[in-house]
Amino acid sequence: MTRTAALFFYYAFARHFPTQPVPGWRFGYWLRRHVVKKIFKRCGDDVLIKHAAYFGSGKNIEIGDRSQIGHGARIGHGAIIGNDVIMGPYIEIMTNAHAYDDPSRPINQQGKLPLKPVTIGNDVWLGTRVIVMPGVHIHDGAVIGACAVVTHDIPAYAIAVGIPAKVIRYRGDKS
Image (tube, rainbow, N blue to C red):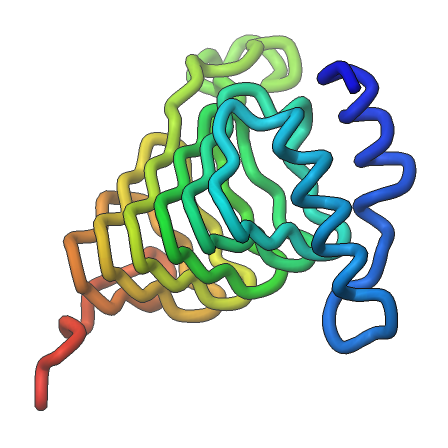
């Protein structure tokens, strides 16, 4: 199967198969993983791609072993996702944005800004509806709380919440 055929098959059929616990979920996970291996630049072992995930053409996306892309997630071109990453539903990983600096021209006529890939380290948990802005690096072991908007890099093992996401403590802290 060519990459183009895999993209067509994914968006026409595979992305619509159910996610756990709906009957048929095991087949849906298997099918999406098999198809995405033909689309992404790298797709590790035991990856889960949940129902309705969207990643455009999948260009230059990398995902590590035992990681998952959550239900309804949207992943931008060039995103790098490490091993053992958990994503809640409806995550947005943005790697580009519109230009808007020239007030004399409508925003829709200013084009896109250059691509800024997002890197997500190993053993990271992104809660439901997290938005990660272009160019951000979320380091290993970080936890991002539900509905946070990540506008800057998050250090290793940090727990960050809010809009914009702020570090409130670190994993393992007893306080």
